[in-house]
Length: 388
Ligand code: NZQ
Ligand code: ZN
Image (cartoon, rainbow, N blue to C red; front, side):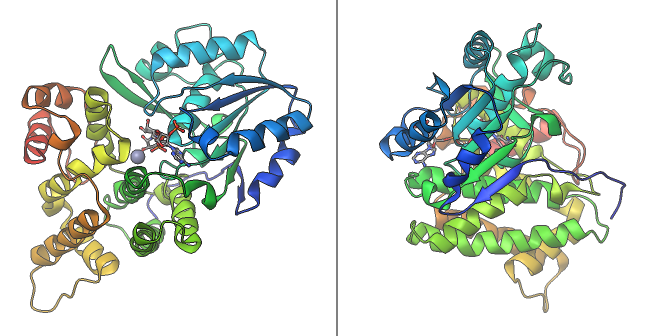
């Protein structure tokens, strides 16, 4: 371990086929006014909406609905939600959906009672919350982001062409999250594999930094091996409970802050991916898959030891009679083959990126320095062009 740290995670998880049963117990802890937040209708199609409404009514709650949360939620929607939450004196925000619905709900929770413009305060100035925070509970239906057990809330400003994540503290984490793997069976394949790659990239973003002997890296390797195994099962057999439940649990652990403890982290794939998202509104996981291979091939020599370890420990690459570079590149080739096998988008052209956007996407990519190479704008342009 490198540094000192504090670890605490206040989100209570209910995991499994019957986990919705526990909503009753949780609802008793909060007041009457519930803001029920959901997306564009998937929960109505699969019957979850009716079940939740009935549990809320049994508990004698006032239900205020905030629907239509779009993938990559916008600041315009956030303003509407914050107003609705304040006007109705909401006691609990119940988020039913994927990362977008959970992130949005957290953003509403800190914005409803905020006197300033929340976009300026939380996203441009990155200030902490100093007003009342409405508690959030999640019922997760899409797996990938880890939003169910972290303080992340990513919001897109379409006018300013900026997609920014604020990582809030423990006081903003969901108070509880309900994780039933069966709720993910209705996800279209595109969303399922996008989520799988989001998980993979959350792990690699935290794995590819430092060269010390760090327990977090061993946990990361185990999570990646399990993900690769279960993803191959799930793409051929989407209703395989074993695989889907493993994937759901890996997603949570990939980004609930555990594997970042005691080390620095990279996050440059996400920074560039978010900027791509701001220009194209593409699905989050696909903005990562489309640039990852070119990014890692661009930086691997700066972190050769770790890339070699990745090849051997995650992809079982044989080392005999090979140079370190050959081993590291073989590991990346294995990752690329797996990505193609599960059906990810492998270039940014397919996401709608055109030549004229490249410079602006590079400008919108926040540069962090926790990875093996601190990129500059020219580096980002090169990676983007190679990813077209
Ligand atoms: O809106 P509905 O009709 O519900 O459809 C959604 C949406 O179109 C659909 N869906 C969800 N559950 C379903 C389902 N369709 C059928 N059956 C189900 N069970 O899936 C679509 C995508 O949902 P979304 O919530 O947008 O996906 P995801 O979970 O990938 O969330 C993406 C957002 O999370 C942010 C991303 O940037 C993006 O804005 N992230 C949040 C993070 C965090 N909080 O830490 C970290 C991530 O890196 C990420 O940046
Ligand atoms: Zn992500």
